[in-house]
Image (cartoon, rainbow, N blue to C red; front, side, top):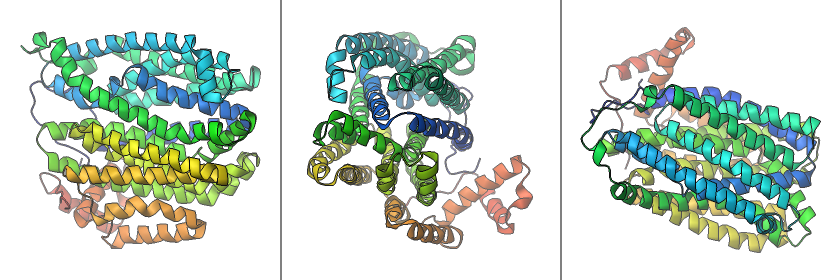
Length: 536
């Protein structure tokens, strides 16, 4: 592949398993994600149509709790796979590494579930402002176990660069969630309990699918050459390397999830309204985030997918190449998210007035700013991979921590005065601060942003100026991508064009491409390696 994301395989202590290249991973992920997200979007619309705003708010708060609790319960150990699986594979110590981390996660998960069930009254008061939902928390404790198992396997297969399997498991999870959720809402109760049960069941389906693959086809992905060092992997050596990284990664994960849910907690506890009305506002907020959170979830998958490839570059000594690939990746993802945001703003009346039956007018009002901050959050998730490669995950925590403090302060100032609008503005400001700090930290470590990347980072704000301004801006961006070089430089265009041509050839569609595209591909294809200019 000639896409800038692809990486030649460098020699290592043991030959790597069959993996998907990064360009192939992106294409497969996007293809399956389209189907998966269509299923998820249809499911979310039906949930919004059938659930009262208060029950939708209960589900939103419970789901937010699971997002925070899952990585916290296992101290983010599975998140280390993307950074260290390649490290231990090259040393012939992969099996020992996985066995010890899996055992630790199983013990920690069991203790966490028992703790949540025992403290269900306290958790109910914390999440919902009342202790009347203790039964819902007890159900969430059971679901937490399946969520942890599902996340463990997704992190494992992503680190192995088996994107086909990851995408298949995620698609199965999404379909199962839709089928179980619709079935329970139609034939049981139209309540948050039904949605929570269906979510836990869907995670169980994904975990069983991944477990079956490990049991029935272990040699396909865990094969490694014997190494003298494999038998000498001491617990102290392993955990002294993994646990510090996991500790910072845990702090990052907790801060990410708190950052993502703090505005809704502020609405529940500081909106100066009754709990029922506060949950109603959370339900409107949930409706405004239906599409924006799809962008965030896609960014999470892309960020997790690119990490093993960047780690491979980094471990092989090609650090400038890793920075250049990540910079171009940020540009392409940011442009795609902006184009999607423009389409969502244009189609907003159809979504809220027709699909959601006009039940969430406040959600439609705050939609543009929700799109803006979700775009920034998604780009932050991808950009932090450079800090992970440099083993400076604590700097991600610093940027998120500053944003979290800003979010709380701004919510305290704006929420009582401006209601839901104030909560969304506060979150947007906090995301802007976190992204700016992260870019500054990356720059100090050698990851420099060119002018095109800086433009992409601020582009999303234009959707708040109205659909016509957003459409005009998108047209200008497309014009520059085709005839200019303010966003993508000439060598970046050649690499992207070469990848497009090769995939067109695979599908027999090359004759439909413009005449100049083939020449660009020939120019790039003649090089032994992709030419990447490191912008300073």
